[in-house]
Length: 240
Length: 240
Image (cartoon, rainbow over all chains, first blue to last red; front, side, top):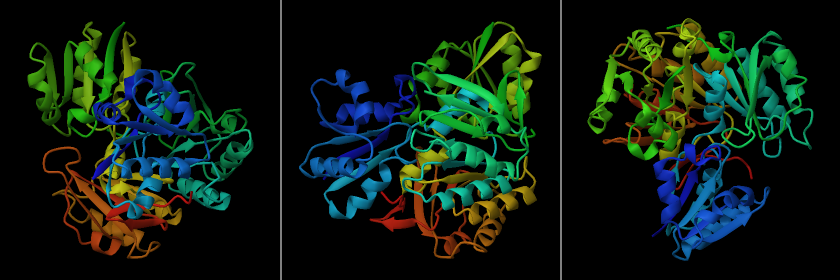
């Protein structure tokens, strides 16, 4: 039985890596991941084998990791944020019946909903939803249905992949849907490059968010009816 | 300006502590938290001052931490899981206008939705909600509204505080509401004592979950229409 660790490494800097994730990387013969993230840690582990693939080649990356593990190597697949939230834990487990000799161990990490919230204040102090606006893997009508449901439930909402060059209008469309239910002055916020060089953030209204020009390195937070700006921070009041 | 760190320490064991949270605890003169959690780390920091309060005395705890910081001490308020998800980041920021000389720094941690998911497989690989069934701070009709909204949106749902001695029927009521929309054979799972001694977990159907006897140390996961059992793990298929 060889081990394939699937480890979330948090938002990018070492500060948010857990001991468990560090240990998995240190134990591995082969480190596997998205080219951009693996390049960040490559220099620290000069004696390891690296397997990287660019974006949109996630399945190929998983297959290569599984093949290496089934040849007896200890493999660490690293994911930014958490491995189980829009990460590689799912596709690897889907392949697992084909590789009965590989023990997949999933190591949790700090996802952007959690690290971004800490930058803005405490926006998801109460019940919340996480929704990705990327329609590469989820059809847009399903995303719309979830936005409407989240607004109806008065959840705090954390939005991943709010827009990209290929999807410049997604965030504005999402805000328009949310404003069918939520007032335009609902407190919102965004954080870009969380925990990395060039971290930026802003607190603004839902109406203003609809016109904001963001990118795929940004995580967005939409407040609920209990969300306020207190001392410049975005805080969802829980009513203690 | 003195610093008050609000640090999530993850599910309990050192393995899931981030470097940043460890550093905050090490820098602090005063360590503050819920009695049970602070007792876990007390022996490691024999030269520190400790401030603890039992459950239901969260506001008193926050006030004591703020007072200590405003007297010039460096304070670390530790929370299990993440500080910003049902944690102490919110109430402390709500008090911040009264303490302009205290710099509140929030350090994210691994919340039970993330650590519990890793134990079960990959149940929240796609859009998900987190809902607490505790009606101490949120009225039950609001919780019901959110459960209905989450079911309508076909979200994966992570449930905190599924039941306790005082709320023995909450999980069964929640499952009945979810079954108005979701089939009774929806894949579900639960994890108890995540990352701690005596960790247990199970995968079962929504119909079975309605009759399960769990407790407040358990985190529950309810799948969406894309959730399957693969090789004994709970996996939400994302359609790569």
